[in-house]
Image (cartoon, rainbow, N blue to C red; front, side, top):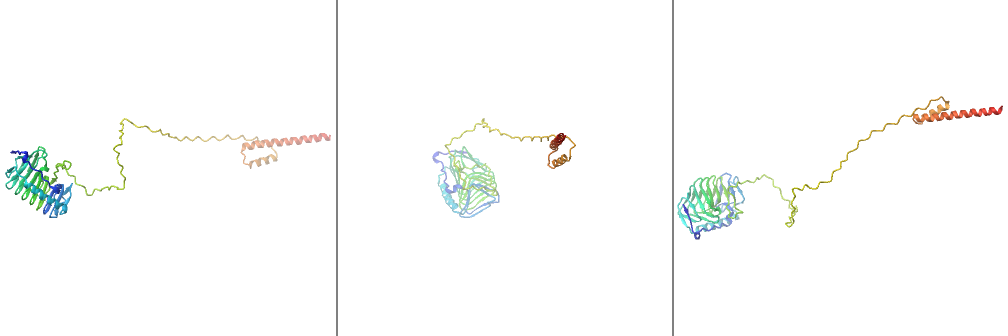
Length: 345
């Protein structure tokens, strides 16, 4: 069955105030039953202070507020939002069972309890708003689904529950639940929205919550896997004294020519050491002097020359000269003797 509603009777989006950042907000306690529930948004409780099961539960993209002033203000804003939802005039009263229906935007009320088995489709554009006023309880069967069609967004779906809400295991739920008492989310259920309980507990069991933001820059992606932060991974601190050079936006950028191979550098002159020349051949030994029979004076001269350290060839020349001088002296003595003999005769 498909219902249509005139624009004059369209629902008004609920302002959650500071509660908008929370995906789970309890009144007395918040409990995760020892499973790796992932909350993509703030987690809080007030006026209670007890939050258990985190870890192994993981809060990403948000902060945990256990009974602090932030959670107290969020609870005040939740009460205001709850009252705003109840004050809007409904366009139709629905039967208990929502399964199998297609609903356009508007405010819908129930006589008592609301239930969902199977799928209910919410059909409308990105600005369409749905407000469900449930006087008693909201209960979904296992593997039930709320389907958005035509561009409808989870941030514009609100469930005001007069008592408590229970989402069955494996339920794929959409929208913000504002329950007077408590909210139980069974094993494996996923929520693109919020579980906000005014006075009672919120109980979780291996669930994934994604905060529905109508601002596209803040909207989460429910199918995007969450990568936990490794607490043991070292963090490199930023040096506060390191100067930062700003980029001049007016400075032109010279594109790089992919065909420019660059200017080659000057050739490198390699000096090859020379090959050492072969040592020179020693000079030929001098010819020994001509031996001659001389008197004792020549022999003495030879002995004297030997003590001078002059090599053999030089000594030979000197000895030859000495021999000639000696012979010349003898010849001159003989000539003188002959002259004296001639005078005497």
